[in-house]
Structure formats: structure tokens, C-alpha cells
Length: 289
Image (cartoon, rainbow, N blue to C red; front, side, top):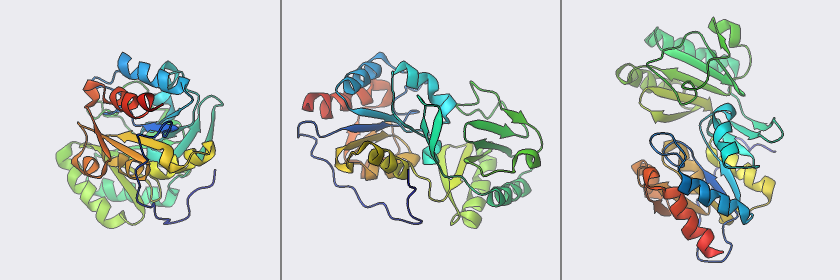
């Protein structure tokens, strides 16, 4: 896969004609807050709809902030064989073949500068680093869980200098919301032009290479399958889904989603706890075939 050119703009979306037969050939779906219910479970209605969609030859691509290992169970339960977008687009992973087909990491030098800056503001801020599908940290705070940390232990716990030696797929800073807010503002002011900052939880900042976006990764995946953007549907709920929902021919925001996302979406789906993914798949894919 060829990465996007530096600072290459993502053109505004023109919605695909959802009423035309077979118009959607690829569906990209976010996980938390979108495909999964608030209890983080996959509903039978969503699973059934995805099975029907894939049986009709439509590619279903999971596009998440999670690493591959944290998507694996859902991926296999859905019996998928497609590429997946991980780390908000910093990685495109081929799970059936066990390889990474695209990777856009942050430099070691920049990661170290950000960590030094954040720890100067708050020595207790938790620093976690993901490199491809491995998790490294110098300490774990169980009061600040991520979806991955709930089910997986770090691959390494030790001094930062021991693992901040290779390019970083994703850098995470965790702290109680009242402590993290000034760190977020400081990092954005000092490093905002050098990185992409992604917010999903009020106690977690996710930092990646400045060109990383689900839209760029989804564009690469669509090109790999030979599918034009007009035949792509993207479904999400949060700020980190803005790019792919805007880029896709048919952009869908969940009713429980962020207002910014709903403002730019072509369609508003019912909430994740109301099987919104199944509803839009039925309406815009299954019933249009």
C-alpha cells in the first residue's frame, strides 16, 4: 500500500446514491460506541446484519482505535476475512495472514519530547506506548483502564528508555480528567502541528503521526479492493471517526455520537444500544440490493 502524500487534503464527500442497487460495496465500522453496545457486547442483530452483508459480497472493515489483539475476538466472531484499520489508521492489519500491510509511526525523538513535556507538567501521568501490536509502559494504573488494558497485560513494564527506542505506533497519556485537561492543552499548543491528537475518553489522550486518520487508512483499503469512495459507507460515533465519515460516499453517525460528527454525516443511525448498525445496513445495503 502506498501512504498518502504529506499534507495531501482529503476532498469533501459527495454522498453515494443509496437508493441505487448495489451502491455500497465496502462498509467501514467503528467498534466502541458504534458496533458494540455500551456494555461492550456485540448484539445478535448487528452480527446477523453483518453476516448477511458479507454473504452478498460486501466488504466489512472494522476501523478502530484499538490494536489488532483487541479486535481479534470480534473479528473472528463476525467471520471476517478483510483488512482492518487499527490505531485510528496508524496501522492496517491483515489478520488472516498475520501481517501488517501499512504502518505510519511517530518518530522516537518526537515521542520522547512529548513524554518529557507531559511528565514535567504531571510526574504521575501514565505513559503507554503501542508499537505494532505490543504494549509497553513504565507503570499501570488500574483506575485508568483502556478497552485493551481490561483484557490484556502489558508486554513490557520498565523504564521508558528501555522501550522508547523504535518508532511509536501510538502514544497514550492517561490521567484523571482534571489533571489531563491542562496536559492536553499544553501538548496541543506545543506539538499540535507535529502530531494528530485523538480524544475518545476524558482521561485518555491518544497521539499518533500527524498524517494518521481513519480516512487515509480507509482510502488505502478501498483502493486495495478496487472500490471507489462512492461505494463506501463509514459508520462511527466519535471525533476520531470524523475523517472517514466525511470521506466515505455515505457517512453515518450514531445517534449517541458526538455532535460534531452528526453535523457532517449524511445519515444519523439509531444509537449503538438500539442496534443502529443493523438498521443502516438493512436500509442502505440489504434492502437496496
